Image (cartoon, rainbow, N blue to C red):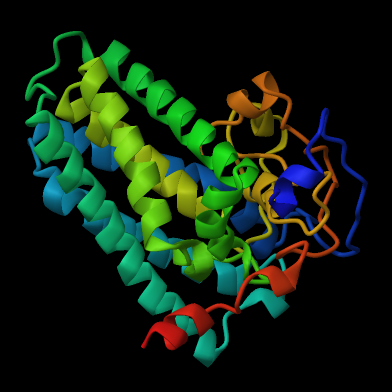
Length: 299
């Protein structure tokens, strides 16, 4: 049985942790930046999505360029309003994180290619329903499948051998969001894309939902001192995702990386205001090689 399943035999409960000096939002420049950081990101999602739909931009280049912009924005925020300065990557970590990021992007691309070959590009070019209905539907469908795959990755011993690679770092930051086993990415992305295609969501709807999911995925992993308050009960956040990476398995819920509604529905929501993990990483560090050691051993 994998390490995550051993502590998850019922309702998940969290302990309260408080780190002095974190989460203080005032009228200082840094306080203002903390307040506007997330709204600016959401506005960017809406703006890029609107232009992409109106001008019929090709998703093949919109999505990668948008992702680069999101990562750059969040990396800057990590320097300006860090949650924990000790979580900044070192030089050696940057090297391995970069390699993992490229593998993650390759795995994501391969997943979409496999789905396209398997189902013959069945997603319609134009929406069969109004985009106002399609976009929320695509977001909810993809989010639910992603939640299920993620949770299974923690509960199934075989899948944990893949997904556990992501939990090896003892930091949570934008750079190590890309630390993944390539097969974990292929599996998760294939199932999400397949579900969206089989339901019949149009490519514009999938593009818009994908922009939001990409922004959220990197936002929740950012080492930034941002609080979103009551929105935590609707959207995933860095506050929740740090708990997900906690070494204390009793509080390591939060399998949703975009929406938090599934965590509420399925009993894996553990966040409360002021709750922070004492440490992040693996509950049993000896169960996995260190970040990069698996790649070095394969070389």
